[in-house]
Length: 196
Ligand SMILES: [Fe+2]
Image (cartoon, rainbow, N blue to C red; front, top):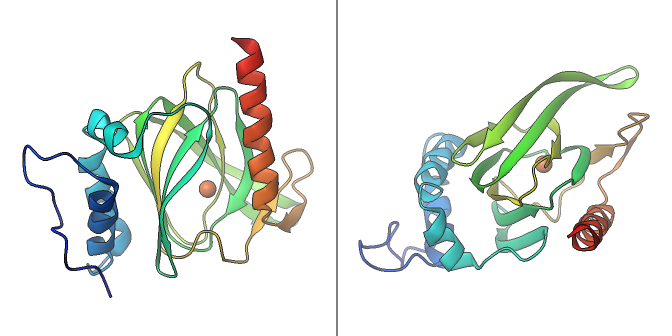
């Protein structure tokens, strides 16, 4: 199924392109444990943030930039606006996040009778890669004064899967609402622009 017409890695001296990023992730799907193979690919890709920025473009504001989405794979560039917090949500597919600018703070949760219970957290500075299994529930925050910029790779179609999100204050469960997420980015961007 993968696009075999492109090399899996780009020759030294040639500029990295979005197609190369996608081809590397797609090649990882053929490995025994795709999420771990994607982790290795992201480890290498995020070691050169300048090449990624040249390929994908600079971050002007927070948001989700789809680089590829198919039934078996989604690749996004996600930029979290300073001060932004995204409420707890699940993906129902494995996910790998590689940070190439700023820092993403992740908090983890488990389902509980009252909705959710806290299950620790992890700060992801630039250069870190996080692998999440299918059943992980997390929230994300950018507490720094710079954009947190990352490649997010999912083992399925991120935009077309039924899953849940939870309110921060009540832990009430709702169907995942990507429109609500888009509004969170808009509000955070407006605050950031007004703040400068
Ligand atoms: Fe997520």
